[in-house]
Amino acid sequence: MEPVRVAEPRPYHHGDLRRALVEAGRRLLEAETGSDISLRAVAREAGVSPAAPYHHFRDKSELLDALAMEGWDQLAEQMRVDLALTAPGQDRLVALGIAYVRFSRENPAIYRVMFDCSQNHEAMPSKLREEGAYRLVCDALIETGLDPSDETGLELASTAVWCAAHGVAEMVGFREFSPLKAHLGGEEAFLRALLSRLTLFSAERESPAG
Amino acid sequence: MEPVRVAEPRPYHHGDLRRALVEAGRRLLEAETGSDISLRAVAREAGVSPAAPYHHFRDKSELLDALAMEGWDQLAEQMRVDLALTAPGQDRLVALGIAYVRFSRENPAIYRVMFDCSQNHEAMPSKLREEGAYRLVCDALIETGLDPSDETGLELASTAVWCAAHGVAEMVGFREFSPLKAHLGGEEAFLRALLSRLTLFSAERESPAG
DNA sequence: AGCCAATCTTGACAACGATCAGATAAGCAC
DNA sequence: GTGCTTATCTGATCGTTGTCAAGATTGGCT
Image 1 (tube, rainbow over the protein chains, first blue to last red):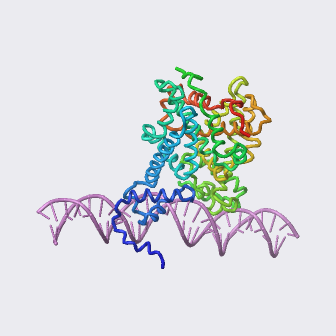
Image 2 (image 1 turned 30 degrees about the vertical axis):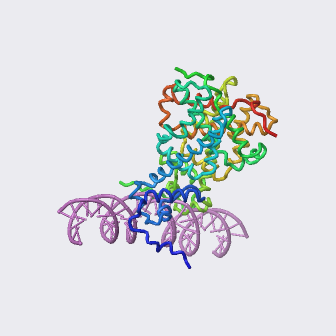
Image 3 (image 1 turned 45 degrees about the vertical axis):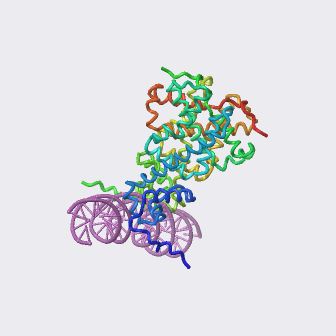
């Protein structure tokens, strides 16, 4: 008995094809392949014709943007969860970094889409800055003693932290580092050692040049 | 009078097509476009048929590997030059970082190919480790007082430094950071401020867990 | 001179992003 | 109900890509 998935009386007008496409894209991104998703494959997965997505997204890149947005939300939530599990005495900044890197390791394809989206737009989504992961980093920095009124210092510090986490995220997958990870007692310890070496000195090390 | 470039009596057997293809690829990478180069375009630029490259490279990715190798050499040379201009008293690690980031800014397409190549192979080219940019970083770290016999510590520190530089390199292009750069007095000052916040604490902050 | 192997071209294939005319359905007027 | 408008989806098509197989061309060796 063959599965007659085709014969399913899917109505000509899909209820919410936009949503269905985003979900299909997410499914494809999560399932291996190598992060470079094809618009046609997404349409196929959603069960519609190759041209259908163009009624909901101008481009392929606009679909990817939508996928990236979901990723940013997912990342922020993950970071919030991990932060809640970290006692105030511990280095919450490192906890955030680990959450960030872990996310990129567990969702490599989505992470790539998220960052490529940012790169194309030459800026992170503003939503991310206002209520997302970036905000969490700033708060954690203020907890460490940074002057909240020193906007430049804060921006610089948060940028540095973000760069550090991103750099680690992109490099940490190399098989080359496996021996080092093993020697340090696993991936988590490796990340902790790496990130604790990258957290800023502190706010007062260098005052902004006027 | 149309330019009869086609009529140039290019011999059937190109002298060294492999070399010519790499150079054509470099030319295309340096000229705008957006970093995603097409094998056919490279062949076109070299004046041969679309299938000709397959006699010198198994894949498109193998051509990109060759281009990446040239990039790594170029980067190492740039770093050596910048290092020579830095007095021993100054922070030579930061100088290396700036050279790294500047390279990625001035050759974005080549840089992307270099790193994508590493990502596909899950390791940096061994040449890079033994005599290239990585070696320079290790030497600079030892200059700062790291114990050269502590292989784990050295590997960890150099990895951290490399992650930091790579993170900055990928983030620093965002238009979003322009005000911050201007406020700090330009790109160079921005980079210096960022990187000096990311250099490691020092070797003895955390001893490797046995 | 004659052959071999390396090299390059031609032609083809499937898959891709994108666009367009046309089919289909839903919503709303009356 | 009938007729119109609009949003949505299909089918066909274009130009491009990576890759391959078959044939043409050439330099080098004997």
